Length: 252
Length: 252
Image 1 (cartoon, rainbow over the protein chains, first blue to last red):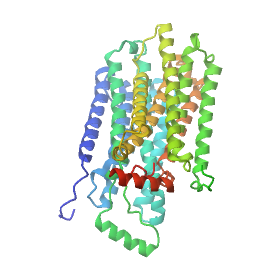
Image 2 (image 1 turned 90 degrees about the vertical axis):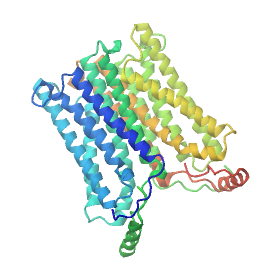
Image 3 (image 1 turned 135 degrees about the vertical axis):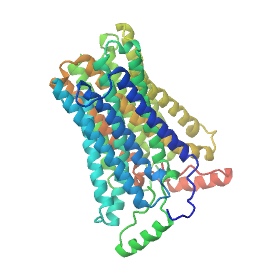
Image 4 (image 1 turned 180 degrees about the horizontal axis):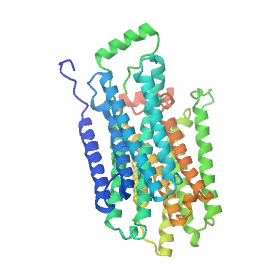
């Protein structure tokens, strides 16, 4: 940011991040291929409105949520404030896209006279969305709005990180449930004959798991955690002295 | 172990472990209730053989696997060797029970002429079982058999821990897929009317997620990690000096 040479990323991190992005783009392409090739495509005001749901959920609740989690690893040498803003922005975008996906499924069910909220997928999905929204609001409240003390922030931070990763895993599990529901509603009789649609959707499921695994590995590897920059250390020590609270400037 | 007073467990840990066990027993009871009340019960040599599958998988791949992960937190003041043996033993038992569950589904499918390994649940389930077996074998090879050096063990340990938690989450996701499959095969038409069987199975799904969440929280909370006991520290320093490798005696 200030023109001084950036410290290098830890060995291997860039390769894992690249693999995660390749997996992310592949799973988006696989979702598009499934909906386009076998489910008639995606449209809003038509019987195809339902298909907007899986596309938005994979894009918002998986790909963008995963990338929002990765920003502290990828932009490790940028100012914390910028990284934090990008983290919040990507999660906000993910939430907006997921909301469109939710509206799509409720409107499509209403048009077709299908009941809502009876399946395990719908229960998990609604729980994941509401908790994700809550996590985002709490994150903004604690880390973006200036009110919270350093001590409060540092006590909340490990919980924010744990629930962030848990919600990401839960979102992926909910997508797997959605894939299974869609297949059993649409190709129940031919699914067991290994028809291409079933195989493609299963592969999409495995890609979702692989994406979650790689993102989870990058996030939890101890020596890849973001260390505070030199100027943040100095600043946080000053604040600590001023407020007599703890410093939240540790690795995350 | 030697009669000296044990250091107290960290505040809150016992409560969380108790909640996890309560959830674990409740989800086993819910599985039993579902199979007993709505699916005719469990038996081996009969058309009910299939029902052995969900029971064994919830018991082995979720409850016992989760408890095997918790032993380092629960028995934090016992000798590392005993804790390690219990950890391996519980995982081994979980694998055996899961194997019975696998045999049950394959035999039941054969008897009824149903295809195998076509669904996302079966792909995920087979992957989870094979990877869990591999993880167990690697764990025994690195940590129980005396051959591996301290340096090798300490390099493998973080990967063993990450994949252990990831496999546990994946096993739970696979159970959710199995619940959805069973419901859509058995009560597809009445599921949307919120019939008791559907609601009970959905609740079982949420209990599985809650169990995973509590176990995951206990495992990943930094200040609840098992610190090496005083005698282990001394012993590991001696070995480190002798072998010039690193000590694997850090917290886990």
